[in-house]
Length: 114
Length: 112
Image 1 (cartoon, rainbow over the protein chains, first blue to last red):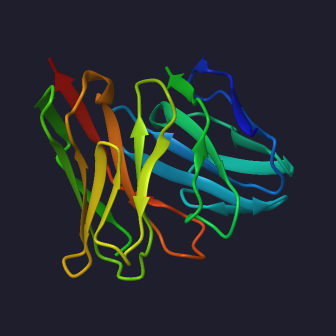
Image 2: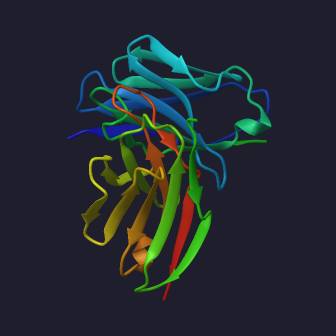
């Protein structure tokens, strides 16, 4: 069966510090991968998505970046965190032609920037 | 045109009652409308989905009603239970699109 892992589960970082969040998927090949951010009490904001290794599409450039070094690994990074980067970061995967296939979400990383 | 508008933002329903959440869209290319359920501290999970070739889809106590001409769809939860308390997101996309457009979410609370 397929599983998705995200770590860390929670993170508290000072403003200006770097960030690296990791997401890995098991049990499937060539998944579509997504990074979302959910601010407190808000909806889901798509940050990045990837349909293959090295293929990253950005929805919200800002100060975040994403990389996909391996087929089932998706990394979200920042060189310098802002207060506004606080939120609940969710990784998701799907297989198939695109978003009409079910997206399976990971457990999330709660990031607090102080 | 890519937006999906969801209402209400929050909803309180008594146990056993019917919970109704509404969504509206602009993009007539959308042809797939899923609903996701999210419990506190967890990632969302697909609850039920509909394509516009039918006006209604039912799975247990959950029903999606779809009105293509009005570009609206809604989630009905019959016999609402405390375990249904969660945030619900509607979404929309079309075949070949890699992205889901999510609504802003509805926090549903079922009270005894």
